[in-house]
Amino acid sequence: PAYLSHDTIAGCLQALRAQTWRDFEVVVADSSPDPRTSGIVEEGFPEVRLVRSPARLLPHGARNLGATHARAALLVFSDPDVYPRADWLAALLAAHRRTGGVVVGALADHGTSWLGRGMHLCKFSKWLPGQPEAEVDNAPTANLLVPRAIFDELGGLRGERFLADAWFSWQLRQHGRVLHFAPAAVVAHHHPSTLGEFLRE
Image (cartoon, rainbow, N blue to C red; front, side, top):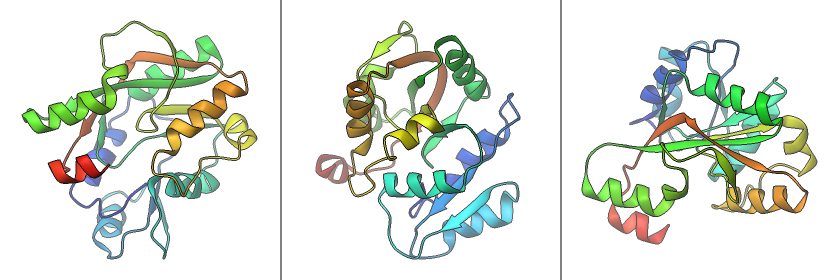
């Protein structure tokens, strides 16, 4: 999902281009009001499928849109300000093969500022790298693999909700699905928000 993501999306797509696992497609669902983000995608990343929405979409509405254009049986969700390690997809797939279900990967902090580190710990302390592989009760969509059949069974994400990943996790658990944490599947999350933006979120 992309919205005014011109400052970070090139780094995200470059990290995806460097993945050791190669059998995947990338769909960017952009609802930005100007062409800066889509221009970066179109000019620098011709292998990416770009889907434009004329109306503003919250992140999970954009994920739903992207999922309708994806062709694979496994969906992997991330963010335009997330930079995966080169073995990220390989590690997610290995965990999925072991468990057969939904997999959430680890989220490291990208950067060294005290504000960014504080925001990261407030939001993602449950999914830091280096923790043991385990069942978890919640799965952020910044680093999530879900089989399409399960995604469709639950009707996708609540696109009108900003924190629809928490709702989706609750629904998964209510339907008897286990959320597996795979600490080896690491992405670095960039936190460009100001303190005011973070407090409002």
